[in-house]
Length: 349
Image (tube, rainbow, N blue to C red; front, side):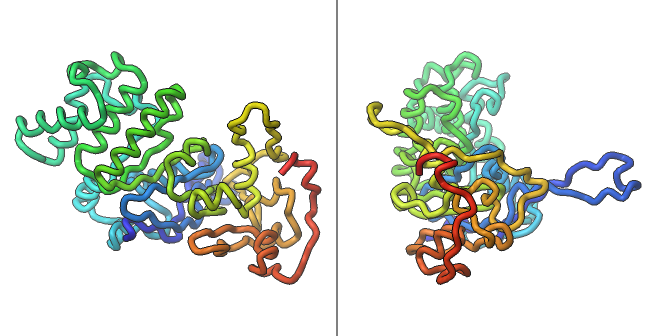
């Protein structure tokens, strides 16, 4: 059952031209943060959004939370269009969609104790009596394995892992159907990361909550996700079941990301794909495939025509003219073209 569906979502931020810009005839420009993204998340599922910094994944998360209003497109929650809903509906929707931020220290009120932080959303939404709220705080702390002795502590008195447990308990307080987890373990030590990931998995099994898990760490993503969406310059270039993507990625950018994961065996040589150049500016994205300036498989069509997301297998979609043609798909099917760049110059694939 589909919980949330995104259709052709776009978010462009205007670039300031200065006071004299309009008088000088300077054209208005935009940052293409999210540029025509579509996906869905089922009940109790974890979808990972991955990509380099600036790919648009955090902006997409904020759009899902209603913290930003999209330029165009739709967000449907259980079939209801909530893209530009009323203030009252947005308030009710916050009970259904919650967030766990990357830095638990900056996201927690330093002036409030742990018990008051967890209890706050219950009070805002008028849930229960004061005594019932206090009991629920105790239950939530037990659920996230946060010892009761920390109830009267302030955030600065806790470790990073304990602070993130407070954030998770606060997100769970309203019984959400979806949690947007924006880099929830990237600020934590590796050993603490594993504990938080295990906790998130356990809570999902117990409550049936769905996650949109935003991360740049593919090792973490592989551990927690059911499906993955790979973003680049505000677009989804590949999406599908996590095991299928890790075993047989079709988009060259996905291959490059996966090649950066070091092997589990330290005796095995690690030779990741080395991409030339930097990520193009989202103010002036390249025509055609957004990845073509850095792609070792690029052909003429990649510079001119944006590749559509095509299904290679049920649920597995990728946007690449060259690999699509290898499968007999897309506009280049039956028209072999030679790559413009030798793959060897980009490292071992």
